[in-house]
Image (cartoon, rainbow, N blue to C red; front, side):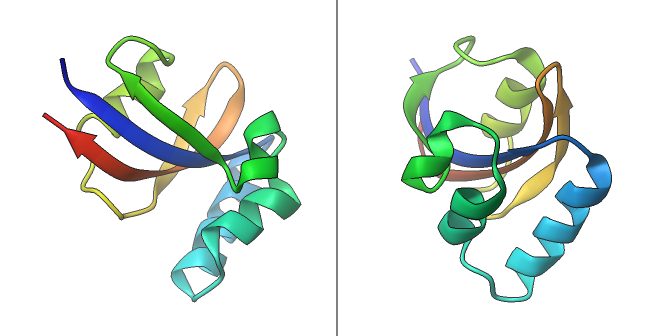
Length: 93
């Protein structure tokens, strides 16, 4: 079974998501941005979600995590929870 590790930042608006993505692409530390801005409890751990398999996350999130290149920030990804920036940190196919 394919497994992936990822971290994310969850915010309420697409606009904020795009601003934070630009900050990260400009050199801001992903984990620090997650700690300061993400509304998910994972923010305490820099947005780290650990390792999980296909189907364990909501569909929109799953699609990105299991197709995006490792180490490249993706988003905004809209789910029922809000807008995410997602970075796949590892994937074992």
